[in-house]
Image 1 (cartoon, chains in turn yellow, brown):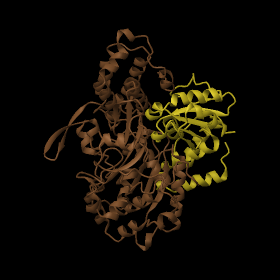
Image 2: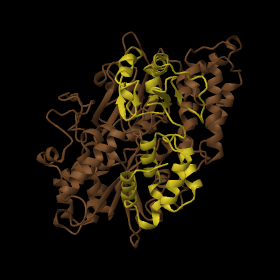
Image 3: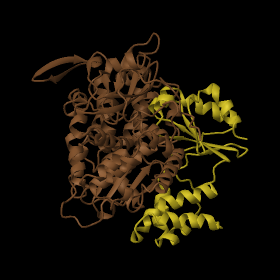
Image 4: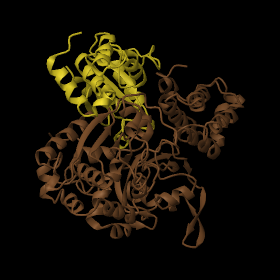
Length: 165
Length: 466
């Protein structure tokens, strides 16, 4: 794993946000940087963060396995998170999920709590349900990468996917 | 950068009283510091810096401001818990983890009025003596984090951050810290653990009251985004004047977020207690969807106990007691508590007569089963069992004893955990089953065994395994 110089500089900047003897606080920010760069958190990434912060890799691994925001496998080119929680469910998020999977060629039959992400056969899209994205008045909502989309009804899904080439 | 959710010129409802949301959807408004300052921004900070820190805290105490994140604890009182003889650094944390299902207010403050939040944080940091403040923002607000970063840069350039702020001896830095998708990080001690780079397992109180032993075991004040914004308005109006807004003990304004089966879901800033549930649904949200009747309301985020249409409640009216129905409940902390639920985070979820309450509870149970941090056994195991039981009720595998089992699991979680998540996950089960027993019996009657009553069950539970 090659960590670009600029990324290491960004990591050093983050570490400065916390007291010198509390470097561990930068764990989440550093993991976010690496996930942004590589798409997921590899074993090498865990070792890199641990070394950078002067801690053991297990202390970083236990964060990666706890927080749903970190992935240990590469997602598709575009990663979609559909809100699953009550207001979005009442607005029809399950139908939205089904429609996106149908259009993108994603099979979700094998997802589980520990492996929640399903990837399309062409690797272009990956998808998972997310818990409440905090936009309950405009459901169903989803995130595609960092882009937020509201009122994603089944009939709008084709248009949504077309934005991502 | 244009915000896609910025509906320029959208007029607030006449029943609203906008302070925090004054600039949300305001025409000609943007998130820049120039716009904010042209409108008088950072004037209250200047005013606060001319006062003694303790005097600022006194104003907040006098305002009666209660926390807007969920518990409704008086903000000024919380600040007062910092030990007077403290010689450790003091931290302020802005809780921007907005994650209680049904709540979507902080998102708009962060996106459209970030400097209002920064001003509130600076005034509050000055009052409590914090030189470093962290904004813990949920990972699912990537754009919000970028907007806040930009606002912080602008404030730094304008010398509103760093040393010698506005030419005084006050110094303060604000940093953004992004979470990673865990609901429990909204719980203040879980948030602190997360900020320390650990799994967000909540700490036990006592002894770990954040104001005494918080971040890095130093005194720490954790306040919600909306609460911190209110501090700015307390400074502008003065505590006593602010306390005249709303109703006694339930002062000021607050933002209610309405979602679910109403004509016009949305966010509304009202004077606390000056509007009833019925007015909120009928007038502000345009009533129920066509041909549908109100069935139930969750009044303060998904963990608040459900209220059933047609119920009556006894609340205090001055010295007397009176009996009211669901539409008559004033939207304030004390009235909703008197009705057996809570005002919580202001997230109102409305359900009509097309909704199957077992399905609704199953959705909520799935959320809590996913989000339990796993530290306390009753919650880790119980939240998953409540989900499994409602799962099987929906898929036709329920048995008559399930209703009783479900409630007993809930009863054995509440009050037996380190943090309030135990109550948060038990209250929905306890209240839904108590108030809609016939619906749960329907799914577990001998006649319906083997029949999947809900086509969405399969997708609803996918992703959580057994």
